[in-house]
Image 1 (tube, rainbow, N blue to C red):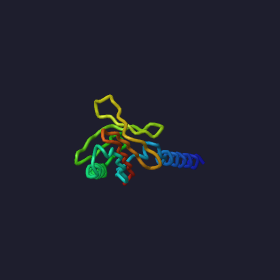
Image 2: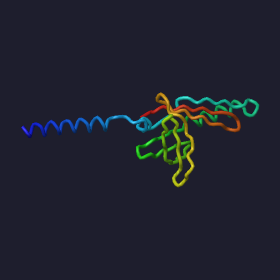
Image 3: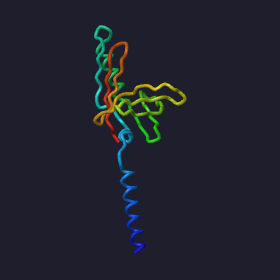
Image 4: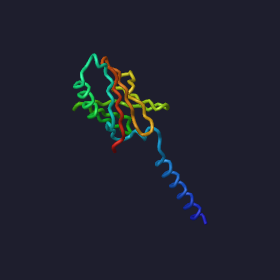
Length: 134
């Protein structure tokens, strides 16, 4: 009788461990590799030409974000690799900071399975949308 009760307790504990370990936290939704699915470049036409707009869009499309469970963010941009630490706020804002730097930089907003980054530049605005690829 004690063996059966012990076995039932063991099975219940294992089920609880499995449920807890499989539960999804908001942060876990970011883990993985993210690639660009859309780029919108809204530059002042008086300050630039269509060729520059196309170059900017093509460069943005090559950006890759890799989020790991140890809070490391790897940004691969134009054959350069940058490592930082990332955080996800309750409102979906993703921020990052470089090691040893106290400044938190806004990366973008996570919503509905995408990360949207809006960059304001002297020429205008760039909106880049990422989706998880892995």
